Length: 319
Image (cartoon, rainbow, N blue to C red; front, side, top):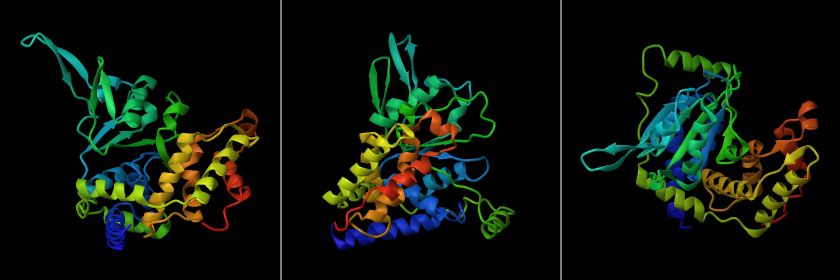
């Protein structure tokens, strides 16, 4: 990769991170990982308690990257047709006409509180997230490029909600938590929302063509064979762990490699190192493993399992 190209992408990412940081204060690590997911072309699940800025992060991201943004508030009465569209009979043409849903002509879709809508409506996103297209009445309609879903959910008051099935969880590149801000950041948040709109100072610093170019540059980041083997050993270890019923799939292994490439680019490098892989492994894999009933009863978490895997799998000494 040319040094000028690498430098230009790195600078654009730094400026983008700073712009989003005007709204999401004190959470630079989360911002970086969201940007890494965008670079890797993946979907993002924000799973956290209410009021920590999940929706604000998605809105700020859309403004900063200049993406066509749309939002759907997931409630029990939202239908699959609201998302993917539907066909209506046109008497004048004596044929059916396709009416687009919220998902069409959108680069960034925020599915807010996705666990509060029906499983049928959740499933309407499956084809879109994997194939970047929707099929209605046997006719396939391509989606915008890029197409990225940011879904939010929270487990507070979860009675009566619909948990995402494992197959759909696997469609999300990462699962992230924002968490509560520290004291200093929270003071800044409160002060900044007294008289001004927090989004008013957010600038568009990347356009669609530049973002697509940055995604192509991400694919060009080098990951040498020993590190590919390291990723393979890590995901294989999740399948053999006694606390795990279902380990990380090959799709998950590919996701780790793509996120590791994005991590390298976020650090201004055109090659992946071991730390890139370790840094993204839990974010990519925690929602992709299913624990055994015994492990859940003992209070073991996916993060505990992945931390053990990282510590027990030998990393390559050189790349």
